[in-house]
Image 1: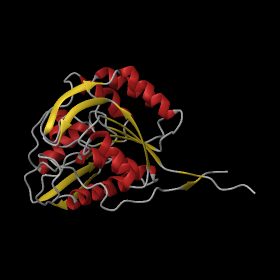
Image 2: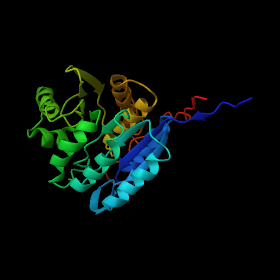
Image 3: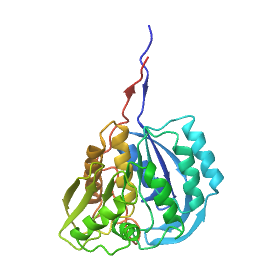
Image 4: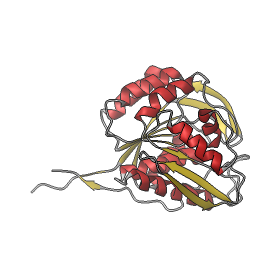
Length: 280
């Protein structure tokens, strides 16, 4: 008699480090784990940071990043991939070269350019490489308004301007786009999802007072990737990912961790690791 065998839905996070635990690859691993998936990771950079900001950034050699990717892909192939901090053109080339052979694996790209603290985290000459090479292989891009303003080349201070900027960014070669409106001065938090078929879906959530949003973009993109690994379709994964980050912020809103922008509560409702039965 043969025994049934199972595997976990695996999510690969390609991102930078955050020693304070709220953002970057640490936020990715927490999110993926909290949503019942198995997290693997590839480190792209070593920022020296805490909740008050980024002090400096040390690069990981591009070949080392490539070797990390090869090692994970040959052993624990992911059901989905989240990409975060990619701060050099050469690194973009390495990542795209390694992932291009797997077009069926969904990729969520959070174009990390500006930290919550306002620090720029990316080299200026990398932006065009990201647009030309990473956008085409990514299933959804998840910029905040600061990042969207850089990509669209315009100020974004209203929902109408979000729509204009989103359409501009889509013309850069995105398959789909989730434009996060958390930085708008408004009573509600509004995000817009620009779908592959040209429709625009609006998501609204109530705002509440908190300093604890450090790593919220990393968390959201990893949540979307986790729901895709659970075989949700993209619109549903986008919706569920936003619900997750909204609740994670809410449940951590009154907690004091660090002296700056504190982390969200990734484990407000942790799920057990999901087991999928394997084909015999």
